[in-house]
Length: 208
Image 1 (cartoon, rainbow, N blue to C red):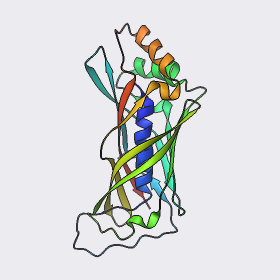
Image 2: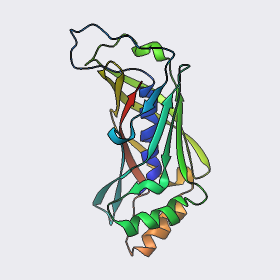
Image 3: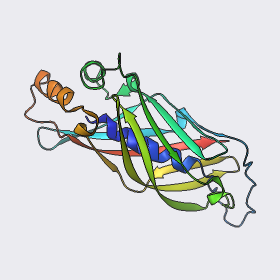
Image 4: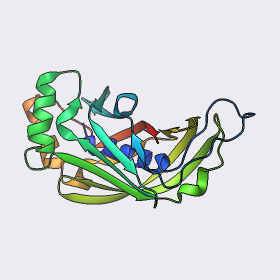
């Protein structure tokens, strides 16, 4: 249930979005990218998921339903995730995570940020795919951590890019002082254990 990992995963995506991505025809001429136009996250086409492991070997996939993101002309990438939009497919568990883990009344948002040269992928044709390695700064629960992100960027159209995890990012509850809330969740659910380490993956679509 360590949602912060998901966030990381989200941050990586922001970086990639700052680039442009490919479409499916590598033979087609590359569409030009307006270097002065910002890129915006397409929420309904994007996913940020994290996997919680309880009772030793019971794994469940969770996500967030509300995210916004922008990559500016100078390469500044920022993604914000509404922690109130956590979706575990069980409403009672969602409520407990908001109140006991994330404490959304005080810390409503997860923010990821990074910086990258926007011209790195300006010549990508539709269908082209690039791999990026970058650092992402994550702000969650009043704390800040920097994570290494391994990502794929694909140009899916003349004004669209897809940013995906090449490998999950592992986030630990203690990174954001969430271990106390995690223990409270374990107790209220009468579980023998909940893993403090959570793999997070992203699939983010950015549009110019």
